Length: 318
Image (cartoon, rainbow, N blue to C red; front, side, top):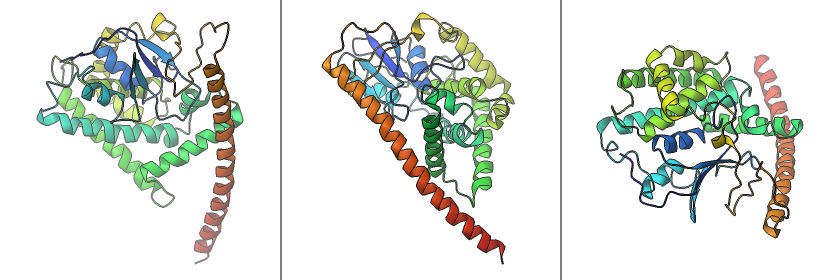
C-alpha cells in the first residue's frame, strides 16, 4: 500500500533522456519513473545529459529533499525507507518477496548489463548514453564502459563463453519463475502494485523496446506470453500518456540540484547566474577529463592486448 508522509507538490525526477518510445531509455532510471507512476505520485520529469557516466542518475527532488541513485540502495529504496512513498509496506514480509527481488535486481539486471554493453555490441547503449556527444568521445566512452561492465560481470577471455551461457540460463530461469508466480494476476502480489512490479515492468519494456531484434534476451522473454501481456496492460493503464513522445510529461525541466548542472532544453534564461556559469565550466571540464581518461585507458589497453596476443602465440606453439 502507498504511504506518503511528506508534501508531494513540486516533485521532480531527473533521468536520462527518452528514446525507443520510453519516457527514459536508461535501464537504471526507468524503474524509478514507473515506481512513481504506480504510486500515482504527481511529478515532473527532467533530463540531464551533461554527465553520461554519472551514477547519481536518477535522482528525485522535492523541496530540500533529494534521493540519489547511488545512495541507500537507490532512489526507490530511499523513498521507501524515508517514508516518502512505500508500495511495499504490506508485501515485503511475504515469503516470495525476497526471492523475487533477487531474481529481478540480480539475475535480470545482470542480463540487461550483458546485453547492453557486450551482447549487442552497443547498438542501444550509444543511443541511450552517448548520442549527444562527439562521435570519437562517444566511442571511447562506450569501450570504457564495456570494459568496466565485463569486469563487473566477471568476464574475461578464458570464461567469456561460459559466463554468457550462465547469464542467459539464469535469465531464462528467472523468466520461468516470474511467469509462474504472476500467472494471470494484474500484479506480482495480486491486486496491489509494489516496487517489484516497477522493476519487472521496466525490464520487460526495456528488453522489448530498446534492445535490437537480434537480442537473445528479447527472444527468451517473448517465450512467456503472460509476462508480455502483463507489461502491455500496465503500460496502457499507468504509462499511456508517457509512452508516445512528445507529450507534456516528457518536456525537459531544469533541476535545482546544486551538485549537478542540469542544462534545460526549454527556453533559456536571459541572464546566467554565477552558479550556472560554474556548472557549464564543470560540464566542459568533465567532457575534457573523460576524453583524456579514455585516451589513456585505450593506450594502456592497447599495450595489454599486445601482451595477451604474444601470450596466445606462445600457447599456440605448444
